[in-house]
Image (tube, rainbow, N blue to C red):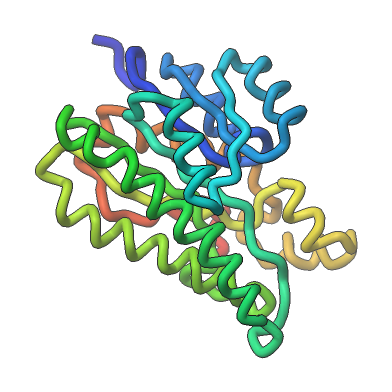
Length: 242
């Protein structure tokens, strides 16, 4: 049997139309998995799916209805990649009640609901991979991303706790925590070229990561070869966390 193959496996990737989500979906397809992409923007989503030969569904996974739409479109899910857009920047003291609730629904509850939908089937089949995209800021909080810091930490610890329950059922639960990665979100957060260069200088690799480098960790965790890795946070950050 060929190593690092996902033939016959089915994956659902949320936030899959661009950035890290799309790169992860692309690599899962390259390993042989059938992939369903879920995102909110139909045009970008349709183009992304066509590029890699994936199915697609317009779904806002910050809502119960959106999660259900994604699950219905994907059918059997062997590999879940939960990837939600990051909450907007602010100071901690400036976050409103609505801001906390939006972050909770978008980042934490999207993952919790998706997991709740795919887990029974994974346990019944004795094979499953649950992977959430979080952030370097889980362990190194950004002073201007308080909602993201809190909600991604909650996702991390939810999956760590869940891993204790389901490891014996052949289901692994891990998070992949990117550092500063060249995506649209980073461009918005670091729009000043001079500031971007200062940030790169503080990264041991002296550059921003590429979405495909983060996706490679996701793809590996989805394989059978990664069956003994669970409850882990995999940092892909060019050494920044050190």
